[in-house]
Image 1 (spheres, rainbow, N blue to C red):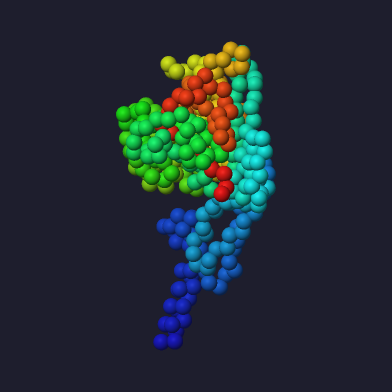
Image 2 (tube, rainbow, N blue to C red):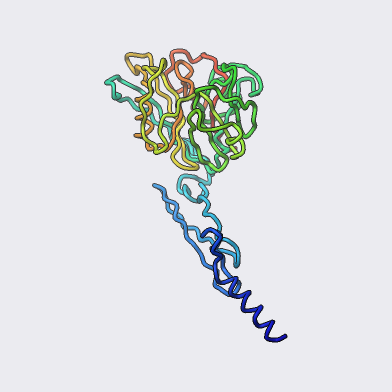
Length: 326
């Protein structure tokens, strides 16, 4: 009897120590109770800071997947304990926004004026959307300035004009309103965990996106960069020199809003979509998405439209915005 108990104990120890031949390697990364708990370190690379997170593995459990370092840690130097306004900047405990205006000649030798809002947030849900009339279930339209003022926005740009599409894929602020993507239209998805990606038509289903916990889904397009963050050639009926609006993504917690002015020969003639694609690559974005352009393309800052639109009273259905800290 004693010999049988010893044999059983030996077999149990062998089973714990030896990986099973029919299990994948990931399933074999298990620590036994008597072994020390291993640790792994993950370094988050950022232009502003580097954070090291040590993850301990519980005994006899698989090694956990490494999670992104929270924006609060990665961008600690971007935020401030006390909210502070500059002429075109704002810093608080959870938001950092700086707006700059540029005048250049684009790749087609056209003079172009554009505005870039560099945005850091602690939480991706601070990138919010608002509808004219306050309800994404309706089809109201109002000027950018009016919608932005109604929600108390710090900064805002026009959205995807969802109300003018018969069918559309609309998820705003985590709420699903419509699940019928427009045919032949790329979508842009901002997830709750801070990732943002564009998806080409034919490579996704609404259910796949819904199941991945999106915070916003926009449907206008096209996507401005390829999967490697490189510029693409874009040619279609509306690809010529026009005012433009775009949202860009660097990493979770870091984004940009871009407005290109146009139809003004003394200041800015607008930008072709291919040139906009190159601009978003030059800004360093990993993903970027074209929003409603033309006279709809406007940037609102702290009470005023700061981009140069021929028609600031142009009505649209929605905006993308950030609130100041209360």
